[in-house]
Amino acid sequence: MPTPVRYADLHLHTFHSDGTRSPREVIDLARSHGIEIVGISDHDNLAAFFEIKGYADSTGVTLVPATELSAEHRGVDVHILAYAFDPVDEHMNQRLTSFRRTRLTRGFAILDKLLAAGFPLRRERVQELCAGASMGRPHIARALVEAGHVASLNEAFDKLLGPGCPAYVGKERFSVREAVAMVKRAGGLTSVAHPSLYPDHRKLVPEVISLGVDGIECYHPDVDEKSREFYLDLAAATGAMVTGGSDDHGLAKDEETIGTVKVPESLVQRILQRL
Ligand code: AMP
Ligand code: FE
Ligand code: FE
Ligand code: ZN
Image (cartoon, helix red, strand yellow):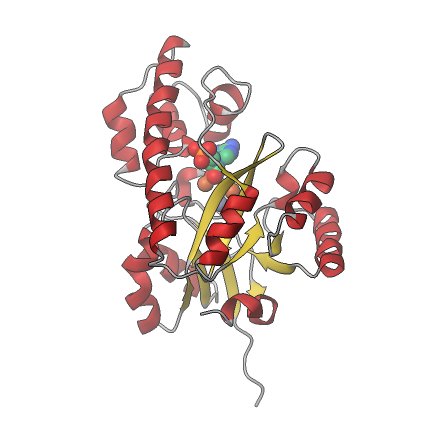
C-alpha cells in the first residue's frame, strides 16, 4: 500500500503574536482540515512551540520550529519565515526578546499618534488584547474597531495604521543578511513570506533570494495564480525551495484562512530533514 500523503501548513499565527487562537486550537483546527505538519510562525516569538510540542507529538502532528521575522530591503518591510532552527538557540532567543520589547514601545508610540489624530484608545485595553504576546498593529486595529473608531480591521490599516497613514510607526527590523545569518547559525532555513505583497515584488524578491534566503512561499492565500507561476519558476531557476501556508490569524484579520493552503509533505522535505 502506498503511504498516504501528509499535508503541511507552515505559516500560522496564535495569540502569542497577532493571532487570536491558542496554539492548541490551531493544532486541532489544522488536524480537522487534514493538516499534520504544522509551523506556527508567530512574529518574533517561539512561545507556541514550547507550549504545544508535547500535545503535537501526542496527536501525531509534526511541529516545525518556526517564526516570522521582519527584515528591511530597500526601505521595504520584507517578512522572512524561519524554519527548523534550534528552538533553544541562545542568540536567536535574545534577538527575538529584544524585538518583542521594541514592539511594545512602538505600540505605545502608535497610540500617541492615534490620540493626536483624534482616535484615543486606552493603553490598558490594548495591553489586554495583546496579553504579553508580540505586540503588533493588529492588536491596535482590534481596539480601534472595538472603540467604534473604524468599522473593520482592514479600515483600521487603510485609514490609520498603514504606511503613509496618520498613526503609522515603523518598527525595528533586521537586514535580510542579518536575519539569514542568525537562522543559519541556529541550524535553520529561511523563506520569503507572501512574495507578491511587496511593492515592485518581481524585482525585489529575486534580490532578496540573492542575499541568501533559502526559499519562496509560493503557496499563500494572497499569492494569486499568476504570481505563483512566476515564483515557482523563480524557485526552479535559482534552486530555492518552495514553501506554503495559510497565514491564518484567527479573528485578527477580516478573513480566516486556515485550511485554504495544504502543501504536500514532499514539497517541504528540505525543512523536515532538519528536524
Ligand atoms: P506589525 O507587525 O505590527 O508591523 O503589523 C503587521 C501585521 O499586521 C502583519 O503581520 C499582518 O498580520 C497584519 N496586517 C496587515 N494588514 C492587515 C489588515 N488589513 N488587517 C488585519 N491585519 C493586517
Ligand atoms: Fe501578522
Ligand atoms: Fe507576514
Ligand atoms: Zn504571517
